[in-house]
Image 1 (cartoon, one colour):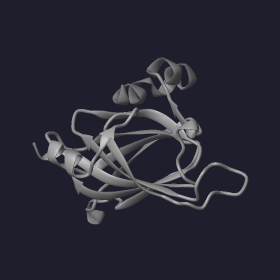
Image 2: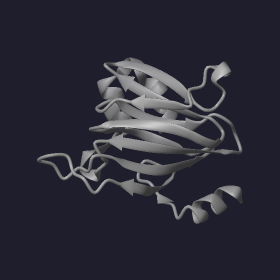
Image 3: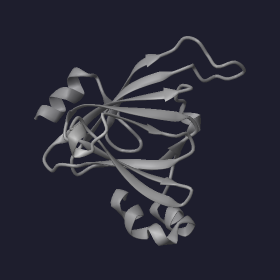
Image 4: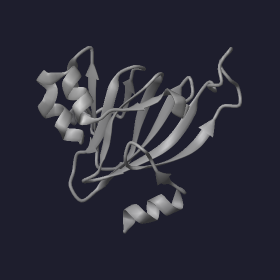
Length: 155
């Protein structure tokens, strides 16, 4: 019930990658010679058992942990898989903020069962859906066959 209350309170909508989001800020200043604003900010909520499927955006995206379970950000960069736990327990090697560099393939999952993760994501220059690319499991496995088991985590 708490998850639905948060979704309603923050006026969130389903995100194409999974989870829920609401844009809370979009700069009125655009990057020169672009339709992209200088920055955008969203709340992103991912319930346990759901996945933020593999995707890529053109620009840098900072993740900031707020509440619920820590969230695992899975990345594939230059053919190498990595995962980072974004949460508030620094002594347990969690990161309160994390940068996914533009062009890196990534997705996310919730660390704890029966919970959710609430984070903010800041994209610089600002997010536009034209810069967003979702991947199927088959596409990624064809490109990175040695990572098939990791790719399956988010499908």
